[in-house]
Image (cartoon, rainbow, N blue to C red):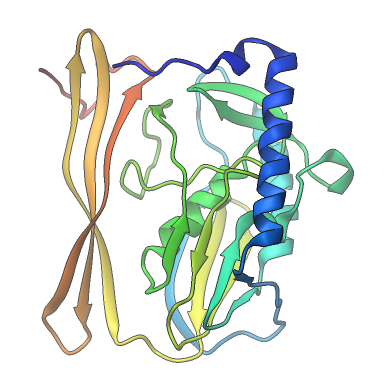
Length: 275
């Protein structure tokens, strides 16, 4: 079944009211939460590298303004400056919005592209999902536990130099769609970020070596047409192995199904099956 937009999205006034109510509720929840949030920024680097990843900054997306993508790079630079070096001690929880705060123009953020119900719109802070996507992908490769993560219900663009499986991202929207993960281990972790000339670069380091090797595996990837609508589906599994050999656990993380919002006709490597 195709997803319908909520009534609040059909009127700017209703939309602002809805967002305002959700933000007030989220502030109340945060004030009453027992979570101890990670806020310590360290200038020194922890000794052990756990995982690293990078994602392309400027993408060839049909019909998009390159200036908005350049704005995104400036936004990412500002956001990374607020997260880079943060320590997540045992028992602490990382919150994307606790560290970055409200992405307003007055705080150094720029207009960029943002996905809203499968469509691109221009908003201040647009593009921050690239950072939340990178953080989420890296965290999946650690023994920290994701406690809040949201995903898009749509697949808006064809793949362009994609290096991670479809459906592995984490969308964010200030302040009530957050990315949060808890360190329930005895180890201390650190997030390092850098906006390079071509890539957004990230690394998670730790105080001591992990005994586990973690792999995220995609299974059952396909495009399928139902009632004239194309969907993209897959499963992502987390496989943990001991450094001394042998798989210790396999866990299904996500079973993804998203409506495709682009023309799949003649796309290289894309075959759409019929249900």
